[in-house]
Length: 598
Image 1 (cartoon, rainbow, N blue to C red):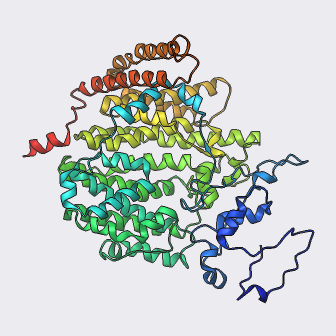
Image 2: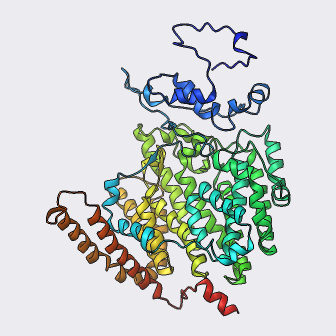
Image 3: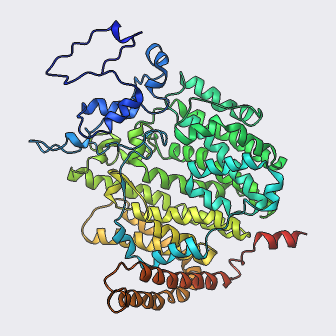
């Protein structure tokens, strides 16, 4: 691709070779996007890839032609970027197919930074999701019967913070992290906004660290990172433009609204947020100059990176819990357990996001692990799933990293057992059960190397509904540890040689031993689901054959089935919540804890 900037169209004469170029046209950025969406037009595959990756996204080459043409801000002299051609150039006489399994989807490239959202997501069909009846029940329950309650409208919140600025913070939180928004909103009013702002501040910092194109040099980026706590958190007018994409970019542009809410927090909370922000920025700065195209160097560096970007978040949350008075003061000193809980979540994301991170040129799988399995010495070796040897080796590498994450579970469970506030417990536990479910989904799953794997939405709803207390959480961890162990044993019995097999079984056995007693308290209650599910399914079957609506869509029957199941889900939740033991004291609501303090 050859680029010129000219003062007018008349300043250059275009005579392309007819065997190389079909047509020439002057276009605006908007017109180019329109033409590239027109399936009747055939663009050069390399131009299409380069355009979607670098030319037209927000903050890309086209947005500031002067900077693009006269500086090295967009130059990359280190990384080699490998692409498959777009789908319209696949096939042909040679039956061309993907080599790198990293084709970018024709989505809106401005939504998220890097490769996020542009790699294929492996999802199950709607029918495959609907056959999980218990998950359908849970979705109905979460949506219509027992949704997560938002405390943003509480008088304490509305009287303390600027309504418009808080509304922006809530809106942007949903945009940059929909999964965290719901669990944050259900926190007690005296803690909710502190955690919301803590998250947004760190997300703004992360946006600066993630942008690989906006800064003239790594030194400039480091300067911004290291001064963030003194600028963004001290200057009410501070904002940043031209960094990040989509909603992350908007978060930085309108950061004064976040600062307004931050400034209204109690001093102790502001002190915690500022301290963690500085320490995280220092850690990020350490990794800015490192070439992560092939991942982190080894497991210690892998752990160190996860500590800076997630372990410190765990520490900050524990300190916020303590200063709120909803948790014991000793929680502020649970540094090791807080760190391990953060590492568990971060490692799960890194494992799942192999392809996104590799395509983005910033990967985190430790080279000391993956190099044992890569025949070519390249992290991208595993993406070639058409090669039988590469496919087998990729699963061995994947399983070792999943096992490494599973070994953090005992500390995560120990942390959760120290909590006393029910709302705080749910806030911490829901991401943890989502993580163990994701690890189960990733284990021995070749789809990790050709896209992004995600758990079913119905399963997510079920996990949320089941996460009310220690028995519920332990039951979830117990079930997924058993599932991973079954997969490992089945593969081993089939003759698959996995170097991590014994280590995996040991990690799963440890989790099952720790959770067996608490999980057993939920088993009897869960048995209620089966008869009620059968009643619901019988009703659905009857409605489809005998009733006046025979032959018509089964939506009414399915809704009735869902309502029956949702009722069962609520019964199970209530039954589980009432159980307690000397090892796991009953959780208290925030209102009860506040009343006890008074």
